[in-house]
Each structure stands twice: as structure tokens, then as C-alpha cells.
Image 1 (cartoon, rainbow, N blue to C red):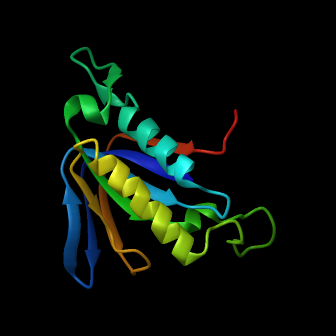
Image 2 (cartoon, rainbow, N blue to C red):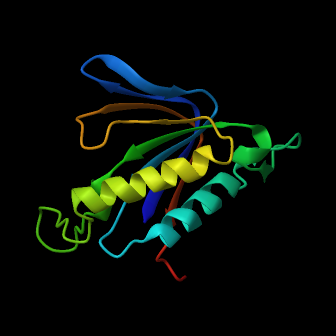
Length: 149
């Protein structure tokens, strides 16, 4: 699994002019699932993201996690994160999981986050969405369950 994680003042997902998910202070996670991913990847990613120390303490040092501040989470499925742009001009999405598998692991990730008592909002899988993000910092990280280094 691969995620682009942004610390936000707020975020929302809109479909056809209707807000389907919104959060205040917390993290927006654009989550991609690969063909090689398993439930273990979903567990690793939820634990890692919820515990990332990216929120400021009283001295302005990033010492607190989403769990520490009781922040909120907005998770949006994003297969294009697995776009390979190394050759040609059109990204290759062969590494991205097929929709059935991606939807299952995306939902597993969301359930794991909710199980930690985190307010977790989502977009709609495979929908055409408008994602509104007020990035705070800005702080943007890439988390990958396969990355060794």
C-alpha cells in the first residue's frame, strides 16, 4: 500500500456538489492499493499513519500523533498513486490492484482506523470526487508498506 498523507486544518470530499465526508484538524490520506498488498499491509499502514508524530507540541516541535491530539482522518481511495511515469508520457497503472481487491483492502484500512476510535471519514470508492484540502504546514509525507529504505 502507498499513501500520500497530509496534515490538514480541514478537508472534505465532494461528489456531484454534495459533501460526502469532511474533517477538521487531522490527516487526509490518499490511499493506493497494489496487486501485492495483503491485510498485513493494511494493518501496517493504519498503525504507522495513526502514530506518525507530525503534530506540534507546545514548543512547535512535531511530537504528537493523530491519536495524541484526537485528530480526525479523511481517507480517499487513489489508484493513481501507483502510476508509473518512468516511460513515455502516459502513466502505467499495472501495479495498482484490481477494483475488487483494492476496495476490500481500502475498507480494511478504514475499519482498522475506526477501531482505534478515530473519527474516520471517506470518499466513495471509484467515484469522481473533488477533494478539498487545507494543508497545514504544509506537511506532506509518503508512506509505503513495501519501501525498505
